[in-house]
Structure formats: structure tokens, C-alpha cells
Length: 58
Image (tube, rainbow, N blue to C red; front, side, top):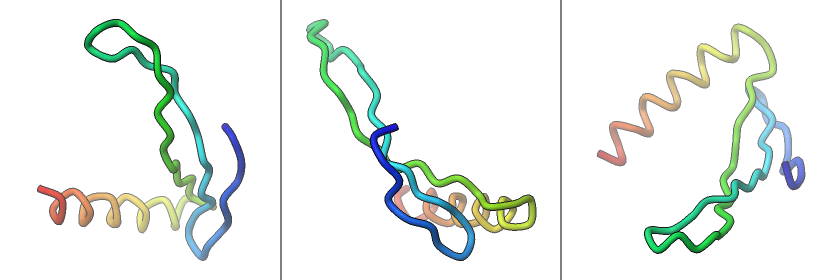
């Protein structure tokens, strides 16, 4: 984890990086935002948001 980006009504957003290799085997780092639900009720809302985003990006 690199840092906490912020906290909203349903989740805390974290900036994370992951070391990976490209198709040539060269290492590189990929950054992503990871959202962590604040509690169980908010986790259900976060899952619904993820499903909606999957449909939009498809």
C-alpha cells in the first residue's frame, strides 16, 4: 500500500502498487485504487457498485 487516498460514505480508498512482469519478462509496477468497505452493510453497496461498473466497461 502506498497511501490512503480518502474515505467516503461507503469505503476507504487505498493506492496500492503491484510488481508484475510484462510479456518480455521485464519487471514493472502497476498502480491501482483498492476500495475497502467500512462495514458489512456498506460491503453490499460496494459489490453492487462493482457490478454496475463491470456492465459499463463491457
